[in-house]
Length: 485
Image (cartoon, rainbow, N blue to C red; front, top):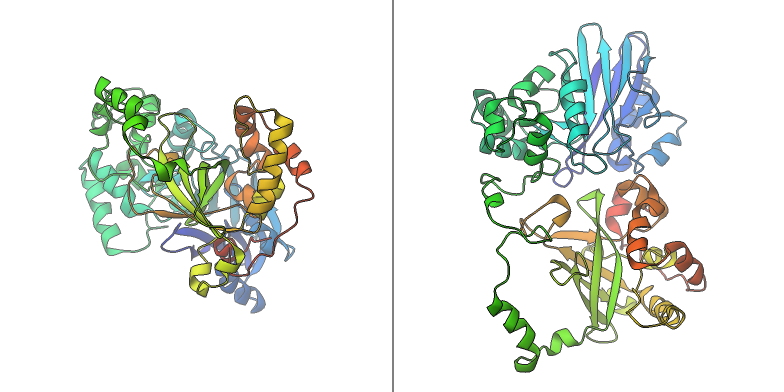
């Protein structure tokens, strides 16, 4: 078999798509083509020249970004519905086995390909070189099964092709747990090479991947546990998709007490409580007192469109053309301030340079879908508040927003770490599915229950909200990904 790697979102998500060809027949499969603008220029010339016959797309998990565009060519779509250990042929020599590995998402599948003694496994966001994926929809027990029962059972000479290039970050974490020769060897390779996909095997992973060495006393030592699932659960409480949140030993932070929101630090003293209680009498909080609206919606990471987070906006009006919002992760008294958003009018947006406009997002879909809500204050009748909320949505719809998050609580950061992340909004039902396979309903069910609202009812109430003109420079990350619909 011939395997061609297709890097995508280099410097951001560092994703990989793969084109795999059965050489005798030229029949080919395309694996995880998440970003068509980067994939199509590599694949289309091969098809037109007759070098390959593209017969299928294989998805290791829900990747709606690329599917609608590439599937339009008539290519068969494979993934999410295949049974564990189900096999099929590509051409004369390629045998594909679907391995159901739920955890990152419940539909996660790894594809094991054999061509005689030539073996490869495409692991998506389940197994990375020296790492493992985020637990979006699963738990440590499921990931342990995926890594150490299903994938570990493959022949040791099976080459590993993951969905992301996270090796350098993964090695940094592994070295905080083990200084084995295998990890040091991987560190040297990763330092000298930008890409590591297909360079290491399942046998190698058993030596240098901390998450596949859970019965090793050295790996267990830092956790104080011996059960593999418990060891894994502790080791993955800090890393997310290989993006390690600190370079020091992550277990040191766990010696610091945490509050009910899992924030490191001791409980507040009486001095702090007295200061808080009397602050309004002795200090002037004029800017904060200008906050006039609480909005709730979801923000998407521009650097990784598969990640989103609930955002509580507390907003004030600076002028009729500029609003500013503090973004919190919850409505609790100890909620974390995770970011800021600025909203501006269309006439102000039009004055911005083209490159600047690409950093801003629209709000129409959030409003019309019912995703954006203004939670009802205690004691206010719903009927009265709904009218006020709908009026506010009329005003928000044409505005453009620019948002940065500083504290990535969704990946377990104990404090704000790394540079700020540009955030954007969802712009269609299909974009929601990129971050949440169950779509709008799956994303909003829990939120709606907590706030006692229904996004579907909100959408119905807002049918008369007029659509806004959307400048072609806005919502750039979705357009670059080919899913702005």
